[in-house]
Length: 241
Image 1 (cartoon, rainbow, N blue to C red):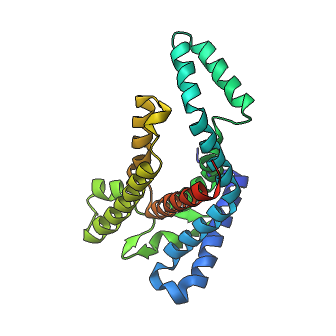
Image 2 (cartoon, one colour; image 1 turned 180 degrees about the vertical axis):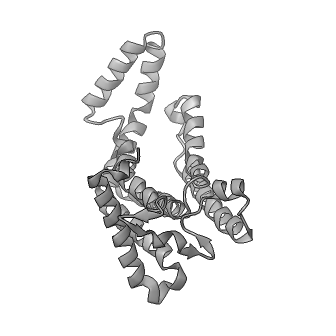
Image 3 (cartoon, one colour; image 1 turned 30 degrees about the vertical axis):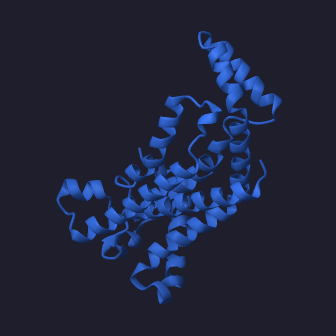
């Protein structure tokens, strides 16, 4: 069963399609054939601006976690054989500091519905009974509805596809590496080695995801990670230790 056949979700899908189509029309005189791609970038920027308060909360939470890292490491050593006690003491520590270990997840959770809706727009050839014209719109000759892995498996990937997706994935990976270097845990905090390795790997998961989703969703991911890096660098200067 297709969830977007349900009336409420079908309506959201049609509204999203209509909004992107209208914005693309507005941008066409400036962006030309890349108007739909430009519309996705604009929508992403609007979403990220709306989530600035969430980003500020996340930055504050990161500062709290950095400050608590040595105490968390002590708890892990003290209660390493008692997982239940460790979890209880960890939550108590966060509660005493008026913080949450899950605050960093807020931006991802807040964006999830929009990412899912954008993904769905570029998966459905027919929306509300009419053909999805956005699927035929392109960025430098590559349809916004195409995915790298799909085009490779079907043998339809050409030079333009390789260049556009290659550039997109490389850009996301570069931003991931810059993020990893800028926000790697301080060894002085005694962060667990496993956690440090996982944090480093997590920065590149988005680049891998971009190979499987439509080009439109990949554009959203690129703008999002670039915005997030810039915002975190700015907030690190603005928010006091």
